[in-house]
Amino acid sequence: MQRQGILTERQRGTLFVFLAAVLYSIGGLCIKVIPWNALSINSARNIVSLVVVGGYLALARHRLRLNRWIFLGAISVCGTNVLFSMANKLTTAANTIVLQFTAPIFVVLLSALFWKRRPQRLDMGACALVMLGVLCFFVDSLEMGGMLGNALALLSGLSYAGVFLLEDLPDADPISSVFWGDALSVVIGFPFLLQETEFTAAAVISVVILGAFQVGLAYVLMCIGLRTTPAVTASLISGIEPVLNPILVAVFYGEEIGRLALAGAAIVVASVVGYNVIRGRRAAAAEQGGRPI
Image 1 (cartoon, helix red, strand yellow):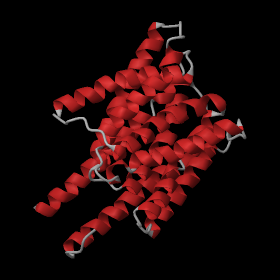
Image 2 (cartoon, one colour):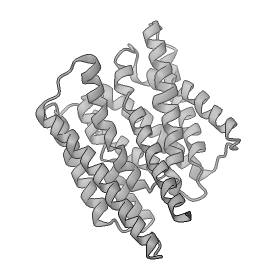
Image 3 (tube, helix red, strand yellow):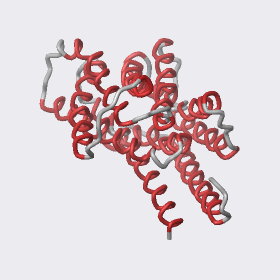
Image 4 (cartoon, one colour):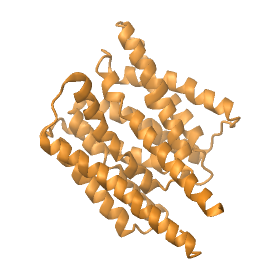
């Protein structure tokens, strides 16, 4: 009975990470209707996110903390928010998403470098397949783009890896890192937000949706999921985000998706599902054999 409970808890954590990735993916839809500077959008949505995250902290009676490790996590959260927003303005959206999704590779490298965790063949194989799927999905639209934008997008992949490692930092508190990271994002973009003049109903509603769901609720779900989901697993599950994002845009805005893109989507989904099925079976076998996972 206890073993079943442990497995159920892990599955719940995986589900929360998956739901967070789905919420992250709605960003492209909302940003399209907001006629603002990228940093203005990022600041405004994080104001709303702070309300959501703060509400969660109050309901959960979780004390907001701050130390150097929590601040390091906040830098990762803020870097992901800011760098991704800037990269979208300086290079193509396809380039930005592809380059940011180097995150699973960075997770494996950082885990090996700082935590001496030797990546398993399953992890490396899944990373390779997911990257192949993402590249296939965007190969028709992948361009050189702006060199600065590409560099910022690659850096956003590194900071995004830091988000998945929030739970692994010494004396960590992921939800506090998210709160302070959102606060930093607000401060950085607020001067740009003050210069905006087009506060249409569509823009304001989109900002609220972005802040409440695509940032606030998504980060809360991610923090809960990371309690029982290893960083490499979480980063691979989030591989659904760069696939869902353009699919949603295609459905709601009529942008076409080519056959190669659909094949890439199938590779990502199959890789993520297969990875978790194999890993789940190995965990169950290890539990039955009395070995640590």
